[in-house]
Image 1 (tube, rainbow, N blue to C red):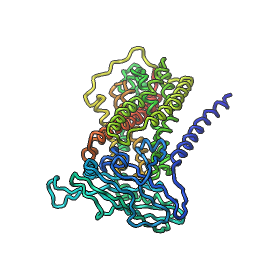
Image 2 (image 1 turned 135 degrees about the vertical axis):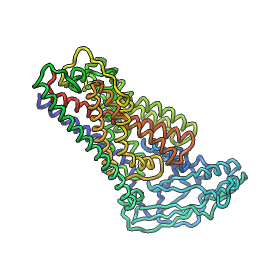
Image 3 (image 1 turned 180 degrees about the vertical axis):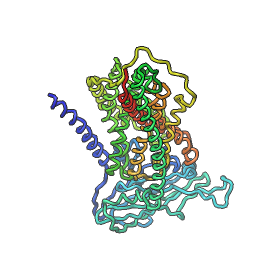
Image 4 (image 1 turned 90 degrees about the vertical axis):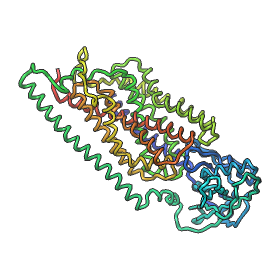
Amino acid sequence: MRYREKMEKKLVPCLVVSILILCSVTLVRSDASDNRYKVGEDVPLYVNKVGPFHNPSETYRYFDLPFCSSGPMTDKKEALGELLNGDRLVTAPYKLDFLNDKDSKIACKNKLTKEQVAQFREAVSKDYYFQMYYDDLPIWGFIGKVEKEGKNDPSEYKYYLFKHLHFTIFYNKDRVIEITAQSDPKNVVDLTEDKEVDVEFMYSVKWKETEIPFEKRMEKYSHSSSLPHHLEIHWFSIINSCVTVLLLTGFLATILMRVLKNDFVKYAHDEESAEDQEETGWKYIHGDVFRYPKYKSVLAAAVGSGTQLFTLTIFIFLLALVGAFYPYNRGALFTALVVIYALTAGIAGYTAASFFCQLEGTNWVRNLLLTGCLFCGPLFLTFCFLNTVAIAYSATAALPFGTIVVIFLIWALVTTPLLVLGGIAGKNSKAEFQAPCRTTKYPREVPPLPWYRKTLPQMAMAGFLPFSAIYIELYYIFASVWGHRIYTIYSILFIVFIILLIVTAFITVALTYFQLAAEDHEWWWRSFLCGGSTGLFVYGYCLYYYFSRSDMSGFMQTSFFFGYMACVCYGFFLMLGSIGFRSSLFFVRHIYHSIKCE
């Protein structure tokens, strides 16, 4: 029986890991194109969305602008991740048959009314861009241009709409390898005045042969982030930052180890010389240091949620490192996030219930409900508000009702049952809290502390050093998520993440030691808050990035940026808080194991 139980304990984690990787890889690879075409065969071209270039979240359907169509429009069936990404693909008015060159072909004709001219003019003034997909290859371009040369008064600006697109397509045997689209700057429509205009949308197609193999056709889109010059600067900045942080960490670690060694020698000498000598420092509070904290149900739920988010992050990194998130694999990241978060709910339930029962908690069901709502609750409320804003703007970021139902079913049929099963397993684990010292009946009073030893100053000190290790990389991530840059150097990001974990763990342990040395035994919540404080610094960086490094504007984009970044930073807070708390718990157990406590 014991052998069987041991085998089950080993097999279950292996099965969970295998299922997660297989499901995630299957989902993120499901829409990869591998089509072969014959001469003259229709290759699908879809128009996706349009929107202001500087507002990546504010996107609209292509035909929300008064573009014309050459025939009946057909919506492409989208996967869950594509819908979450705001993709809404529709058949395009341009026909790009395989290996068929075309010259100034008329796609469709349209007579623009005064209102439609004003709509196009406003879009051109906001630098609207379009996005299309041809054989799953992305195409971008601006819909028009503003002529400002020699004019200081905005009322004198000229607004033009591009009406001729030149497509250059590269092929290798029977496969499409690359496509570019260029607007003809001379073939435009004047939109400056409010008057009816007749427009003929035209296009040209030129096919060229290339030696690039099909397997490497997506590498073009990652070159911008991995050019030798950019990569060298990137690596140098990261190494410089990380070496500085690690040197500081090593310096503090050396000091802490020496102080601890002196403490152990001192306490051992005191025990040998005088048994009745009054204790001082962190040994003095050995009877209170393992006293269970206030709001232990909330702490257990926070540790459980943070552990789940940490597991989610590790799996996302594994998928990224094996190449699952290649550029413009539409919605792959969102699909992986939803699926893996749902499948790791059991980890949160098990961790929270097990820890709560170790702290002699009784109402484990309520603790489980709190664990399930601690992160999902704020995320759901934020989503409801932002989805309402997107609906009011008629933006593609507004999720269809069917997609919302699918996400709810995943939460109800996968996340919740796994959370409950994990909670039941954690409750039945019957693990005891390993405290090396007995807790006294009555708590000691915490002595008065100077202001810099209070919670908020300690959180500020704890969050600054880990944040300094990641702030350079944050710019590249923000420019990718909230801009149009492509991020593909996941190896650098993973190294930075590991350093972030190490620095967070150490700085939290160091502050916990100084807190105990000041005879303050209320370290439980302090260690969690100090560990997670980096999330607050990241949100502070959001303010800096929005106002100083980006050109985002408008209520919708502002609400999306600060709303969803608040959820991301809150998740960061929970994840790093659980790392800091576990590190401190391990450290406190270790140092009190090393001395004799009555």
